[in-house]
Image 1 (cartoon, rainbow, N blue to C red):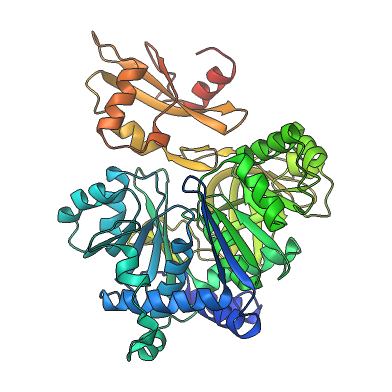
Image 2: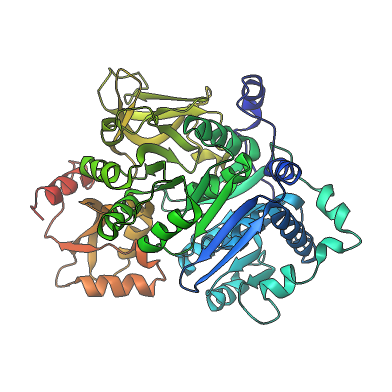
Amino acid sequence: MHFDAVLLPARRGAAVAAGHWPDRTINDALDACLRACPDRVALTAVRVEAGDMRRFTYRELGTMVDRVAVGLSKLGVGRDDVVSMQLPNWWQFTVLYLACSRIGAVVNPMMHIFRERELSFMLAHGESKPRKVFDHEAMARGLQPSLPALQRIVVIDGGGPDDFDALLTTPQWERDPDAARILSANRPSPDDVTQLIYTSGTTGEPKGVMHSANTLMANILPYAARLHLGEDDVVLMASPMAHQTGFMYGLMMPIVLRCRAVLQDVWQPARAVALVREESVSFTMASTPFLGDLARTVDESGLAVPTLRTFLCAGAPIPGPLVEQARRVLGTKIVSAWGMSENGAMTTTLPEDDDARSCTTDGCALPGAEVKVVDADGRAVPTGEAGRLLVRSASNFGGYLKRPQWNNTDADGWFDTGDLARVDASGYIRIDGRSKDVIIRGGENIPVVEIEALLYRHPAVAQVAIVAYPDERLGERACAIVVPKAGQTIDFAGMAAFLEQQKVARQYVPERLVVREAMPTTPSGKIQKFRLREMLREGAL
């Protein structure tokens, strides 16, 4: 695979000189753990529904990583090959990423909710070589004939010839005579692409975000420093590691800090409370529904979580009453943040800030990052006024795979986020809406343009617009507003069934349907989505 990460070379000199690019990879971080603290617990992975738990010390983790790395090489995986993983938060996820890094392969984490429509594009576009799947084997087999680059499917708990353990963890590949060469010959440099992660956008097509070790580390290090995280911390990650949140701060950051990660694969608030208590968890990061569930469970059960020092909340504004409840019930500092797959967390409030900041702002820029708000002509807007949010950071991505025309980055390195924001006199931002048609439901981006395009294929649909409406728990939900064709009708059940037939992930199906005779439009005929959002908020639909 050729990675056209065109945004990286021009930034290298300044980023290294400023100390923002540390020129270290995850291999260096893991090797440092193996030297300094080999017998420290590195990873505790919980499978909630299976009822099991697996622990690794750094020594045990290092051995398993080398074993799987050599095993992948024996399967034909080499430098710059893309390995796609569709996994929950299992220990295999962590091991596979670290193993890929040992041999210079590029990991492509994919949400386990994705189905044929999303996967067929991502696997073809990313030219994935092997794919790791859970409980989706038949789907993967069905897709394989149309994906010439997809050479191998490996299934966790699969039992047959493509079983993960049989191929990669049971054979002691680290003892292979060629293991030393395999583990050293193709290690990536800090500027090589190490992660390919897809994000939804306004184009109707997922975009392949490319990151190097330097861009990822340039965010993880100042993020951890701002939040006062170190080797004595225990990080709980229940947000999916196929999202940048889980990947950067649940997988990579604990290794960089030489601390311990606790992975939870299925969100059950009561189990999360038990894990915080049993494992002495001090930090976690998730979207607002997780925080609300945790606070409510502790309140109802009376089981305190005194070790949980910080909960960083991102993905949607945090309601003030929730911050107050969480502080009272959990005794935990609530930190708000804003970021994107393209650059990680860009802004956070400070642990030292007054609690009110967390429910009225999305924080200020991390060290090594800059934010500015501009008007349509690119001029800075006055303090407190809304405009387009631009960011410039050492952690900005290397570009979109095979789509450099969408990189949205100017000659000075400013990336247009597509979001609207305000900035106050202290430099704290507040996201004020989105210029792109993406709905964030419980921290999960819904690709609005793609779902609209599918609904336009419905025989009864003349016009359709999908817009967000507020939800107390998830932040936003999706509503489809439809103008039917003359003489045709459509109801919610029919819409949902149609999208299911199109193999759309269930989480992407709108939760409401409104049928209208006409849409509010501009004089040129463009649907005014802002009016539809207003009408939903006002109860007019």
